[in-house]
Length: 145
Image 1 (cartoon, rainbow, N blue to C red):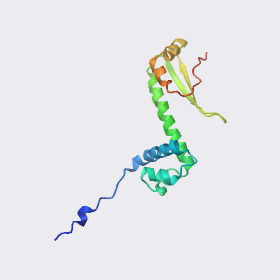
Image 2: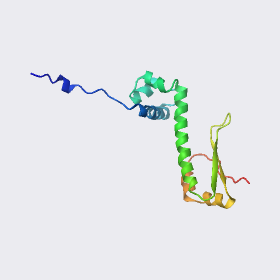
Image 3: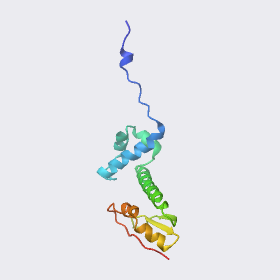
Image 4: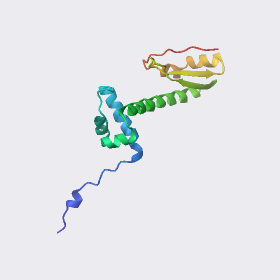
């Protein structure tokens, strides 16, 4: 008689290595938002992501590095979305992301337009209104000649 023990054993969980950084960033973001940076422990992030603490440290050597990666990932995706939106407008030439100076906590986006008319068309567009309706504080928007 054959033992059906083998049929009851689950195959080991294999996770694609490429998805781990994203899973760790998502778990960290959720915990940082819920508990704050100081109150979140690395073990909790690892547990939330379904990995060991050692695995977390293979990707991010410290909680501070993990936090920086979470911020970078989220800022980069927001900037990419904004750039895609603004590039559709006639007259858009370029933009720069200006990092906060010491004591500040806001990034600034500097855009360059072919003319004042192009800039004003962007400012009066629904895409601009949608992108700035999130309730975030903005020091928007001034034309520089």
